Length: 304
Ligand SMILES: [Zn+2]
Ligand SMILES: [Zn+2]
Image (cartoon, rainbow, N blue to C red; front, side, top):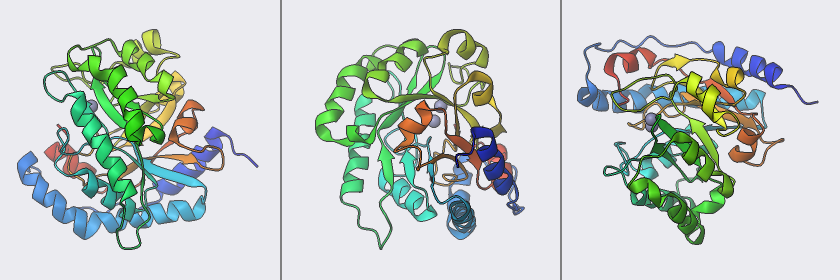
């Protein structure tokens, strides 16, 4: 019997709310640079086992669930760890898929960086050999800067193949020299069978960062597919997807290979063959897996 979206969400969310959070004692004055080694220590000693255990329980209760990270960065843009390190860690946590989203910004992070990162994901997947760990499914994706803010574009995993990556280059090389309206970026991913995800909505920076939900409602209805409802990195939990009729995404925006897996996106694999299909059907779910680092993150602002 098929549960509807609300029932499903209630059951899974009710379950995840039952997780106990450990209270970590960390210096509130920790700054970004100081936080990296602290983060690494906590990550290896404590956090990994907590995330692993919670994901294992989720899957035990919902065997068809596919769970993954949909927003994170590596050294190909402003992240501090390699594609290989993120893939191994995500796989060891029990995640089923990983969407790495390098920045694409004129004169700062060219498309070539994203394409090299995508090629590396394909290579790591193909040559995977890590002590009995199953290879993690990866998708081509990047986070493009537009006139209104960031937008994540993700592609079917078929575009990992070298001969298909060229199609992405032809379509998106225009972003190397120009900042386009968000509508344009959202439109350009559609011919690929790809999806667009709005990250960190309503969050302001000195430059266009999180597009407002007002703008989404007025200008992006029917164009964008999904929105981040829960973000560990940006420290909020909302119900934007339900309000706007979009698919619900949970992610970390991790730059330190630390908070991957603390907030995830899930879908039912008995209904959908991949993330693209689940997002298009508006049947993805944002889930908080572990909140024990939330205080550290808001204190140290790990995400730039
Ligand atoms: Zn962003
Ligand atoms: Zn990001």
